[in-house]
Image 1 (cartoon, rainbow, N blue to C red):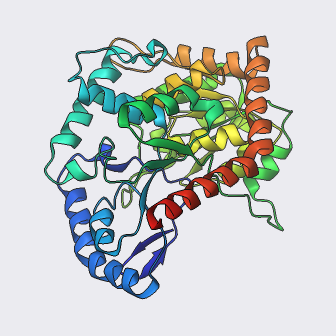
Image 2 (image 1 turned 180 degrees about the vertical axis):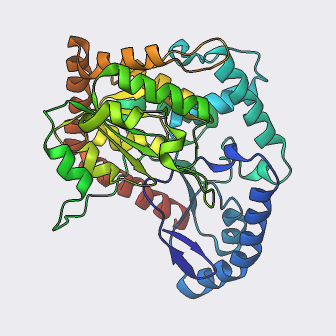
Amino acid sequence: MTAAAGTFCYIDPECEQTGLLGVKSDVYSLGVMLLQIIAIPNVSNIFKTLSPDLVIYDINQAWVPTIASPFNVPVVQFMTTGTTVVSYSIHFIKNHGGVEFPFPEIKLREFHEKQYHDTLLSAVNHPQNKQDAPVNVKPSCNILLFNTFRELEGKYIDYLSVINEKKVVPVGPLVQDIVDEIEQSEIMQWLDKKGESSTVFVSFGSEYFLSKHEIEEIAHGIELSKVNFIWVVRFPMGEKVELEETLPKGFLERVGERGMVVEGWAPQARILTHSNTGGFVSHCGWNSIMESLKFGVPIIAMPMHLDQPLNARLVKDVGVAVEVNRDINGKLNREDIAQVIRKVVVSKSGKELRTKARDFSENIKMKGDEQMNEVVEELMQLCKSLKD
């Protein structure tokens, strides 16, 4: 839930929240400034009326600590990204790119590295973004909340705590529970008829739209893999595009009953939790990773931009993903896509990946309440310390 001007709005769980690393123009910054102008008086009134003991804010409300200061209320920042990307970003900014990140397993490919460094510097140097950029976590009190968990990012949680001099408290994975439905959708009825772990779910989130080349290579890669699939294809809002025209000629006829292409939206969480889903072809947005691990599904990593290449390296390193290779210019290749899909869904190593992913899922189920109790205790101690 996000509060602004005294109202609440629902955030779709499939919406990837990349913060201001995604800014390519002044439009987003203008929106943030307008929201700030509207929200500040209302938030001040909320402080006066409710006298809260604690305030939690996210990356787009970096002005909250200033508003809270006269009321002597502890403020804690909640980050919807992982600690790997934030620790990498802070390390890069502090060392001006001159010192290697101390975890070589997160080393980015050259084209992704340049892309990320340029985007990060642009975000940090933008006048409006300086207070909202992911490296600016200083205004928060002595702790930071992250949508992550120690089994996935333990060493990055610890490293970030050291370089930022604040305790990092994991609160994840925060994934919306599946709501029971009386009627199964056409997609789920189709999936019910497939074999166990025989199908890949293909989706690249709500913020990234595939290029013509990417659609063609992914389509041919899926076709060459001969694996069952559900593929969600999205187009920019207001753009009139015929789905069949964007796919290779004859693709739908050739794949026949082993594939389903869906435009716009599909019940991602329900698909991932289905026993017949054996892999997730993903851009590695953080929310998608959290869902994939909660439901125990290995990842075919195909990161596109922003934090995604770092996230992909992380899940590859912990043994729940295989990343698709690219050429020196970052272009995808259909044969490589097909090879990785088959490796995850068909080969012996795929069974090992699924076992590892299911281990993560079981661990999440076992430790969920325990971790949240620790979070509550941390917040209570913070409130108590500031009152004493």
